[in-house]
Image (tube, rainbow, N blue to C red; front, side, top):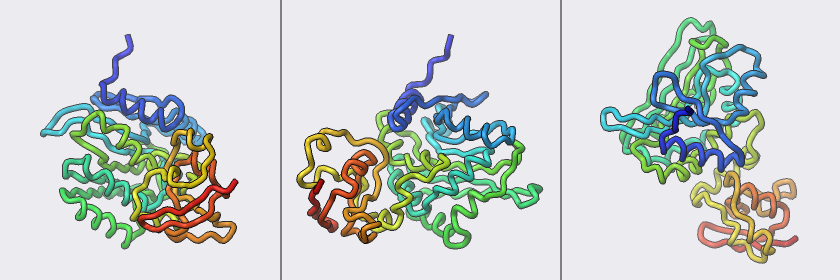
Length: 292
């Protein structure tokens, strides 16, 4: 008889499946009461790499145990997988990563933790690094220091990796702990970019990185209802996909990457309105019209 998943793991599976638009999968960790929730496609990426890698994991990791006052720990992990590291490094946006850590601080009970292991070029020595802070401002200062000194992606997601399961680079970051199960969809939504960076093609929002940075003072949620003159079919369309920085006047038509030319739109509403908007916005007001 198939073992029933813990309630929190089932909720995480449902939340990830909802974002994917298809069924995600669960992999229990041997001899531990913890579970990875990931995309079945990751197995195909791994096999296509042809390195006979074993023991790899990449995705959300739900730790369902209670020790030292901690239970329901949720981390994002990458373990022993050169190909997944390469995808993640290609898509990684440090400013977006930093914002994710800031936006999810409320779910971590003042325990902000990041762990990574890197090897030298010859794979003969490894270095283990941990950043542990109780204050989110101190944690952000520490990761900023890594970014300034080395370049965060270059340091942590190095190209050099190994096909041997005991020599692969590792990366763990704490997303939430001692959280309520009802918070899982919100946590997944706030951290979804991490999951999307595990794919070989660059997510659509990477294209708009400069505009993304300009709009960080505005809450990242779909603003489609502020657009004037939308047809009913767009108004009736439910939000779906990653919330992206969308140009009001398209970049290829001379639109700037300044805040005045940007809206936060989910992938669905971005596609439905792209190239059909006029107007501008500031921090408090949106004066944008739909022009089919």
